[in-house]
Amino acid sequence: MSESVIRHDWQLDEIEALFALPFNDLLFRAQQVHRQHFDPNEVQVSTLLSIKTGACPEDCGYCSQSAHHDTGLERERLLPIEEVVAAAKAAREKGATRFCMGAAWRNPTDRNLDRVIEMIQAVRALGMETCVTLGMLGAEQAVRLREVGLDYYNHNLDTSPEFYGNVITTRTFEDRIETLKHVREAGINVCAGGILGMGEAPRDRARMLQELANLPEHPQSVPINLLVQVEGTPLFGVDGIDPLDFVRNIAVARILMPRSHVRLSAGRTDMSDELQALCFLAGANSIFYGERLLTTDNPDADHDHRLFERLGIHVLAAPADEQKVCCGA
Ligand code: SAM
Ligand code: DTB
Ligand code: SF4
Image (cartoon, rainbow, N blue to C red; front, side, top):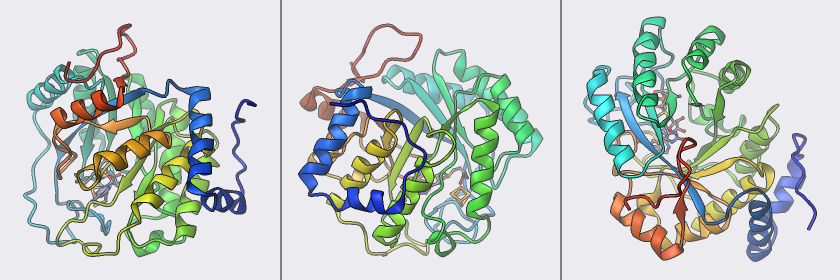
């Protein structure tokens, strides 16, 4: 079996041809690529916390936190650092190795950033990896975050450039590419992916993966979210995606970005254990772990622990930790 090559020149017809493969052939290829680069039974786990919730000026059509939609969500101020540290400790105790803090901002002000930097430093002091998702980021802001040791910055492309305007009008696809450039050039690991099941066409799914794979460097982490339909958002009630097509997207992401962690992200409460097992077989090797995503539910940690046991999956330990531990164990 030849070593998979890391490419940044994927053509759309090549990607569409992967999607058109018989399901078993596609999963076999994805699994081959996966085994060249990863322990196939190891999954990385991150826990999320919304550090600033609601009243966001952006109009993302999927989001519970946009001030443009009436979702009944209560707005909250930036959390005090003590609450953030307590949540990070609880996540660490349950087996999470990365703590990801999200804020409902278009972009952070420099004063906002000062507060978030204190949080990053406090979470790092617990021995956890850190990730933040704060909206658009300037080049100098990215450098500041790198200097305090931030490990990952999450900023999603969300969908294809062609479908993008159907979902978000207050910032452009190019704005997102620009933020990713600032993060990458500052030397922070990039976490970038998107959402499936927003009414996009199969071609949009292929285009989104093409955009991700043809970035100058593959994002180190690629979250693939299944739309969590939130009442009051414009996308509530949209026709979803065939679950097997969701699995195909994971497999194609794995083939295009062989060394990236592909994260089975939002939407797991709507998935059976068997569907999630197929996603792991297709090359997903990361999840969000813990009862809450940002504002919506995620499977119980105990349930995930049992699922991992049934599948013989172990959790990737934090970098400083030599030992492999199973979450919740
Ligand atoms: N405000 C920041 C931003 O948009 O960059 C950070 C937080 S935002 C909630 C992070 C990402 O979560 C979005 O880009 C989107 O991909 C994902 N997301 C938000 N709401 C979602 C939903 N209802 N279902 C699936 N994914 C969602
Ligand atoms: C990502 O791609 N998914 C996460 C994280 N990055 C920040 C967020 C999912 C949010 C799901 C809806 C909610 O809980 O508000
Ligand atoms: Fe705001 Fe982020 Fe939600 Fe868009 S996804 S409305 S930017 S919190």
